[in-house]
Length: 501
Ligand code: F6P
Image 1 (cartoon, rainbow, N blue to C red):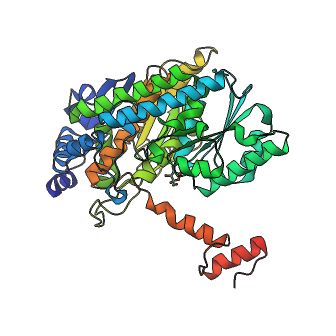
Image 2 (image 1 turned 180 degrees about the vertical axis):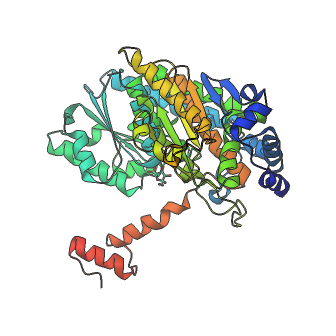
Image 3 (image 1 turned 90 degrees about the vertical axis):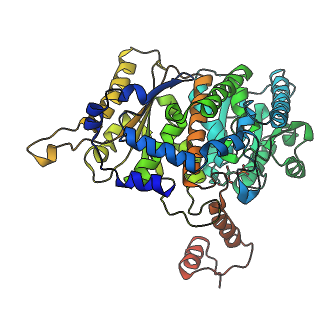
């Protein structure tokens, strides 16, 4: 293992221009088509030799065995003693887990059918409260695919700032609103407070039985019952589905409702196609694995601290937000599986935005700044609008031009006007944006995160880093008696006029 890293570290860097010149088959080897997605890794500095070294690293770190263990329902999250069975949600997993997920999906479908049959009276608005993995996935799905669906007005509220909930319900009629409380644990303080306030909003606006309009999406049904949700309106999912991997489970309820059940099934099928690709394709033709090689190359060999993702499609504007949680909460770790410190940088900081907007905001730094930032472009061949086709054409040519310009650069006598070039990018081009393709795209990112974790020997499935802040917030809110630093005490005193001393 150390040898593979050593080889990578000792390789003399070759420019992108020289790599294309010396490897005539480069584009063919480093681009591939899978599940309606075209991946192009050729504008990265992965030479043939670097890929060979990464293949050795994958071998010595046991990537294939870890992947197989994940799909077989093995304990791949040892710090919490859990499996990671998001694959089973789309039919790729241990048979008993697939059967259990199937039963949960059937329950969700039955409830959706009942809602559509107006068993709860007319429903026009879906108010989904949840945070982190219990919000970002459904929000991405509804925003990307639900624009023309028009079946329901859907609001997904995560922030505990009351302004978010207030704004969300401003145009909602409480009598035709269904409240979905999404929380794997059913203990997350922001979600519980938002849920209680949403129920109060219904009650104060004349809904006789607000709890009768509540659905719970959770892996802790007993807590939802304690909260007051009727057992028949609890949609459970398995404890072994991690929060940031949970949009395939009942957490995807608002998307399944807003987009329709067929669309939700297509989403699962697209993800399953990517699961099979990750499981079966040789690593040098495996999109998530090649993407992980790119990630590791820039983070560990070229010491890039960040990676940027630009969605060249308005429908995918929430993708960077979604990926921030998926990548940073999963692999933002400092210790390896055995508890020893990681000798290497783990997850880069994921950031990004939407093209072409970002070109007029942050691309200056990408072209001429002092930081090396590997860039990822995500675009869709088929337009999402019905305006003059010039719009979509301009969008795509801008996307492709940015990748070309980053790589080619341009010398100039005036240093202010010179572009160094040799800056890397990858491009993902979807044929069209439909539920199946989006499912495949999201699953691609999940497996890329997993492959990165395997190469680093870290656990992508726990998130203890978020706990300390939660505990301190509780203590500051009048819970446990903890001593705080003078700065924090002064802030509390200033904001609330409370003396903590
Ligand atoms: O931020 C920590 C976290 O546990 C995420 O991993 C999770 O998606 C989010 O909080 C919400 O948790 P829950 O679904 O249990 O409310």
